[in-house]
Length: 126
Image 1 (cartoon, rainbow, N blue to C red):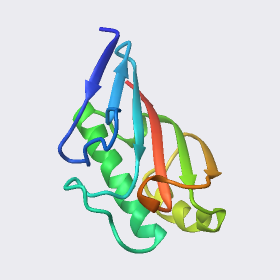
Image 2: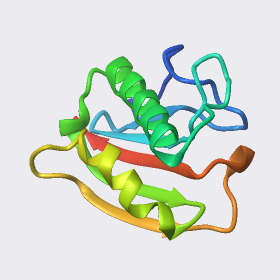
Image 3: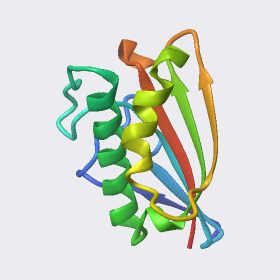
């Protein structure tokens, strides 16, 4: 197996031509960016902490479907609408990585899908 699609109803379906995650070479899982949509496709209202919590909940659902946990994450990229959200996102995000957190990049971008304030993508290893 070179490539396998991972999909779960526990996270929102793709809103474009992409998969929730792709398992590559049986060793790596590349998770698409998750924004604060519920599995039903409803946008989470509230501050960036609420948005981050939903994004991380979605990621957990995809990891669960793949048989992995946050301990398997090796790289994260966080996209923010403003660096003013950095500390608030860290408060929520940090709760998922209690020991040896993964490598991470955080960048502010001009815009995110549906006007949200945060999008998070990850790479995991089996």
